[in-house]
Length: 389
Image 1 (cartoon, rainbow, N blue to C red):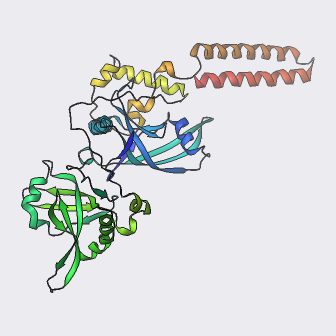
Image 2 (cartoon, one colour):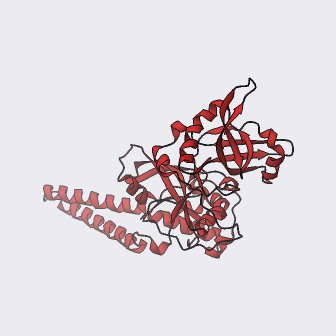
């Protein structure tokens, strides 16, 4: 599916703990003990309506690797807008920063990772108006104040959403005006739905006029992301657009219009199955997950779907998904009965070796030492395995 870049003016911690180790290692191509590494790029947010434990899970994926998921409360907040993107035939993508390093804990190698995605609040993910068809949309950048918007306050008040804030797509047009000194200067007008709603300062206009002229030479308008805020008393508008020096060369070649049209908002959307199990082999995590899940949702997955937690966190202790991410039957790990039998066999063997060492004392000193060493080794193995269980 085609990527749909969500509004990225915000940040959100996502859950990476414990059970995405294999996938994270694949992303980095391996990690070194105690040495932090960083991956930064676009990641996909994939809703998983067929997830066996929470049908409102939203996973974070780099290619085919599922490296994180949204905390439960955040997944529920973002579910509808991201489901709308998928129902429209697109894949939601956001910038992701993933930091990871390999650590040794109790003799086991574990990945210690944190991840943050750049994403706006749910009600600011999409513009309230469509992008013009014949327009090149500028990459987003730092905010730029639109001037003289009070001259168009009546029209702007009719645009402001009920929440008091919304994202918009505006167009920029180069113009010539006469200033207060009677000098004609180049300026950039800001238009919403082909109606002027403000202008840029003369200095700022100089940074955008070359871009506007380049798009015009290719029979395209220049569009940009903006934010409108207002109340019954005042209204303001800002742009979030990259300046000429910040626009990559590829943009001038492609002149992209990357704000695709979405289906109308609805109470629910038909989504395809998307759940994929992670490849963790941490058996004790799956045991903790099953215990916590059974206590919280005695009626199974249906109970999980109906529940709505009152608080959310990226910590594993606050998010049931942070303790396991696949059904117990799909997890790898030794059978508890086999492991206990192994402990018993090792304990019996240790006892027999101790008896043999006692018998050999004074008869074969060298053999006694060897038997004692083996007894210590088997005893230690039994003790370690018992502690692990």
